[in-house]
Image 1 (cartoon, one colour):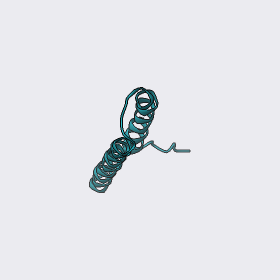
Image 2 (cartoon, helix red, strand yellow; image 1 turned 180 degrees about the vertical axis):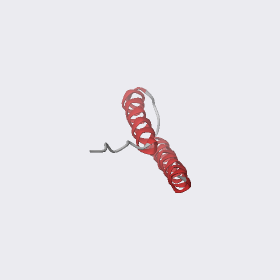
Image 3 (tube, helix red, strand yellow; image 1 turned 90 degrees about the vertical axis):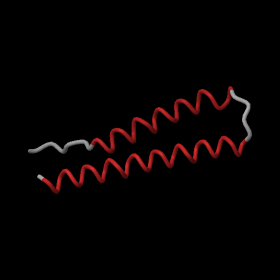
Image 4 (cartoon, helix red, strand yellow; image 1 turned 45 degrees about the horizontal axis):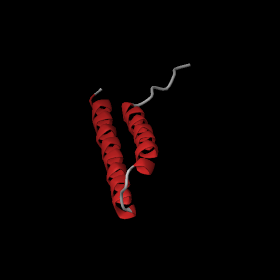
Length: 67
């Protein structure tokens, strides 16, 4: 039975999401920031994560087509 390969796009996105959650959990209670600025930072971070996932998925699908 062939084992499914874990895609790089999934691993990178999960790692960056985990890193972000840890950083936010550590720094947000310790920093004096307004609520709107915190939500803006979280939103930009989520946008970066989605863009990374999309770019890597696109690259992987292009690589699979060439094989």
